[in-house]
Image (cartoon, rainbow, N blue to C red):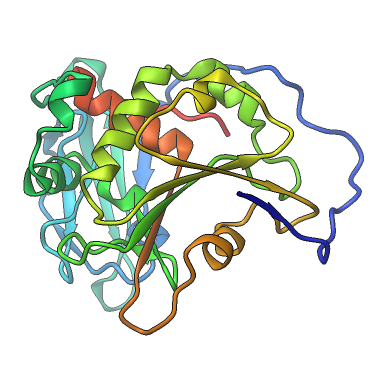
Length: 268
């Protein structure tokens, strides 16, 4: 299915991102801001001075205690800054590459399809990758025990200066995307839908299995997930839930299940 819209507008801005990827070295400090996730009520699992492994849980959501938020790098907790009413503003971590990392059991592409959904949920929640799954309406973090009627994978935004999907695909392995799709398929009784620009023809997308392929064309907001949902599997009542996730996050999930290790690197 091709989703084509006529009503919209592309901003005419001077210049465009070069199709080159520059690696940014890890900083010596990282800060975690719970406010980046609206609706989450953080409960700390660490204190100042603690040594954290890469992928170790830093806090969880009081509303959904199974959802953990983890450290993207190993290090030492330098500061926990509280604002008004003891609201956690940020957690500052001094990076230490020798702090170690959390690991999980690796699987093959075939093994993933044999896993139980409760095992999938547990791995995604403990690894800190669950918050990459958002739900429509409202775009809040998906709720693990309330499976959606379908899942959407976004590939490229039509907003100005969005990361080019061709550049992204050049840097991620097809097996990671496929493994991520196999994981998502176990989380819904409906379909997993991948929506990509009509003008993009790439074997890393066309050869994927266990996914419904769709395309979009037209001006912004043709690339927005809300347009895709309303055209393919619209929300019809208050009990309907649709989840969505970016293709880069799908690849990160796939990499975790294939290697047992967390990778937080993205192209922006």
